[in-house]
Length: 378
Ligand SMILES: Cc1cc2nc3c(=O)[nH]c(=O)nc-3n(C[C@H](O)[C@H](O)[C@H](O)COP(=O)(O)OP(=O)(O)OC[C@H]3O[C@@H](n4cnc5c(N)ncnc54)[C@H](O)[C@@H]3O)c2cc1C
Image 1: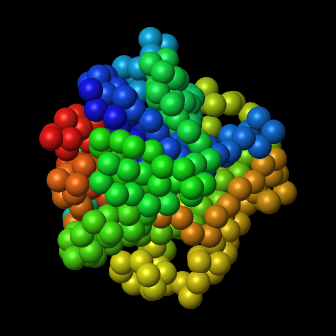
Image 2 (image 1 turned 30 degrees about the vertical axis):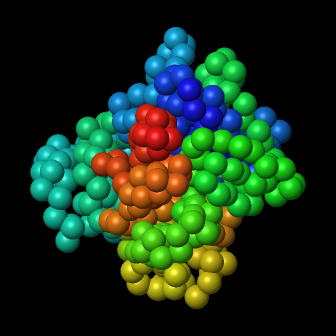
């Protein structure tokens, strides 16, 4: 049995803790913020849960698979459906009232030619960036890109409940300041002795932590990472404002608005829960610069909502927004999980090598780190 400290209680950290505990190790999770779930969490505004922008998961992907196995209570989920998705300057992707257009669209989506607007639209909605990520893009076409009846945070809650059941401590409000082989230093001055450290705290913090162990190696493995940021607006409304659509996408400007309640009616039949996102476009993001600042990007998103969800501002019940958040931790290149294993350190997160993307990559690499504890200890 090894002692394991997991830094970060996002999806990667929670998945790692579950796997390492199951393998018989003693696990403690340290989280600097007051909440678990990282970017997958929600804040409760008078009983209305608002998250960090639109989140969809792949049916039977690593995240869904893990959550389904944790509880006997069935997880109900509904797919986003392309006959209720509009791509700006094209129309509904697969219109039910026009069989011919729908068949042509199906074929175009299968062929995946990025010169076609609906292909770019479907790709953006499934993966939040321009490169074709086949797993999620295919899932969208096959009605397998889902919203659950519990929301994303309900799924994270199932992971936390399972950890609680097996007695794993998740310590919130504890920031890790520094690590060295076999020891974790907390911001409050305390130290924790451990055999293995799993860094599931995002690439910036992970890089800072391993720099002291081998500066050159840290530079080599982290420098090629590219991250993409986003702005989001989440609102609970007392009206239906997307005219029956589940999502509207402006692929030229990388903007999207989703209505969770239109996708998953179990979240509530009245009103709507809009989650809108503007992706990339800042100087620090890969690709073209379209916005002078994050505030300008947020304003463009708000203007898009004025156009497509008209009157939304008059119907707000709850509101949350953020001008800048990392939506994609990595591009094509990702960090090898075991690069610092000889120092007793493993990496987990969507920025770590995996055949999956986004939350599925976070869970996949978290589980892989949990399974690798014994090899990192030796
Ligand atoms: C707007 C938006 C939309 C998205 N849409 C989707 C989607 O549709 N589908 C999908 O699959 N994914 C989506 N994602 C991505 C998904 O949210 C992330 O890939 C996933 O949540 C990453 O999990 P993680 O555990 O790797 O990292 P994080 O969630 O970032 O967790 C890292 C944790 O480490 C903690 N931490 C950091 N430093 C320290 C420290 N020094 N000490 C202690 N703790 C520390 C942080 O507080 C945080 O809780 C989206 C993300 C955003 C922002």
